[in-house]
Length: 351
Image 1: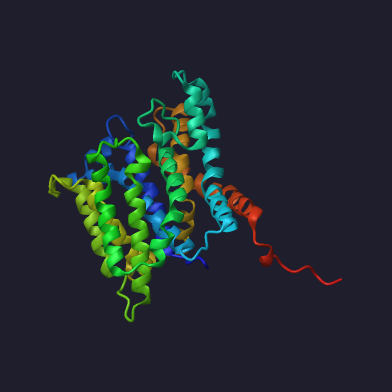
Image 2 (image 1 turned 90 degrees about the vertical axis):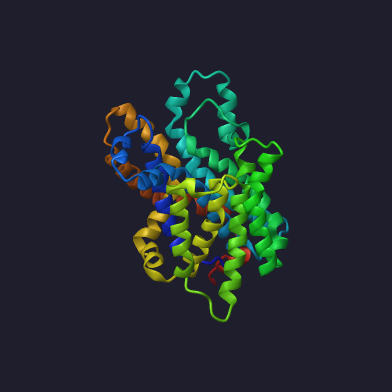
């Protein structure tokens, strides 16, 4: 299946990564906490809620994978191509991030450190619950992604038979799944299981987008992404408006789905702004931003505890853009090339 490009969704990734960085710079004792406290309460709460960007990334992952692999025939070769493509997407920059913090890992005296190092290398640390090391805290989400990548082929049957009834049932299941897990005793610290519902919502949203796109008169994207964005921002800024039986993550899940469908449909000022060449390039470098910002922070603080936070953010963006162009994308192409279809190779020149 030919991959569809969604430039507005790519541009969105940059702002999600930036939101995570701002979240890590606020909070008690953090560099931007004093400045953030001067903001209106709702805006302060919104910035502090930057960890919610990770759940949006999970929904986005399900959406994009569905668009890329919905028509895949899961034979041995295509499964290998899929698996290698997922490894190529995640591991090169992730291993670079671990290399950046090697001095801090070597200096760490936490008991059981070899096991934690192995867990990080294998990307299974999020299955261990709360662990006492924080060499690169955002990497827990990659444990989730690897789990989602593994279970995605099981969704193929649903994707091919998706209709509005099945999509509505799947979305409702995704909304309720996490709370059902909590009810039967699954710990909130087992993140891959807890956040599977976000990934499933992304799959349902992608199927809904496909049906809308094939309809006689698809809705304008801003009809969906404006209420999706406003609703998500509202419940993050003022979570007390939610009833006690609805947690914030469950409330955000359908709003994230609506937001992504709207941006994929396009149209309107926001979608056009996120689709500009600069926004798309920064969006492509957002994975490097996300996984390198904590290792870069370690080194900035090692240089000076008073390192200017705005300079730090500028360094993260610049380094990530460089890493994407000079390392991430070439490494991705090279790894994917190991299983390139010979039929797509250029024919040799005639003698």
